[in-house]
Length: 124
Figure (cartoon, rainbow, N blue to C red):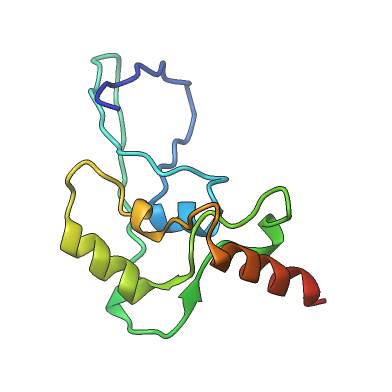
């Protein structure tokens, strides 16, 4: 998509832009977007950036779609990954206009989806 949408401001609203890792663990329930702003001149605007940087603290935690969000009708969209691998891929590819999430997507016919789903629903 190479165009912007004009979104009218909502007085008193809080807008939160999420990143790709939250889109991955929410299994596309929440969507990350490329954030761009063309500020109008209708009063003050405050922007605060806050970054989640777990890659600065090495960990072996594996992230994937939250199991409670999955069902047979809503199978996983993404494979599991570590933050280290996620950030390494993101850093390697750079910001070229393509989402790094594509690299972590499962194919609909992927055997991994079937295995993941069968394991998820047999654990109680």
